Image (tube, rainbow, N blue to C red; front, side, top):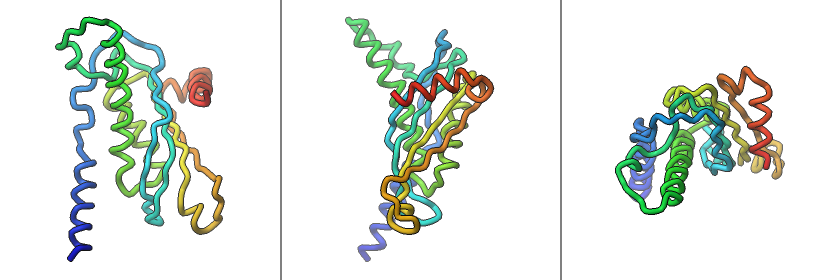
Length: 179
């Protein structure tokens, strides 16, 4: 009986992570067109081929096209210090990136598809000039079985729009995530 209850709790947990409303009013219009990067976002997922974990970090960038990630409710609150408002704005901006990585990684997954799903979701929601996603992950199937290489990692990337079409933009992103 205990095993069934555990499976039921796990099923409810997975369903709760698959909320289709990823944005929750987190997008607003802003005249900003420089690269926005969120890097070193930790992720954990379960390989759908071997049913063992893989984990690592995601790096996400986008070039806004008059839409940025934030929280529209910030405009409704008055703050005495401008700098605290700016800090809250950036906090919400990066929480969105963390949330989108978590939503797609908390299911049976392959790293290649995960990378593409994150990039396409950001592209669809923000309609930016470009999106770049790089994921670096360690797969326990490679560590525990098969090749048994402890320090081996897998890197996948998806470049859309300007990141795909302009090598200098892609190079800038790749150099910034290495720092």
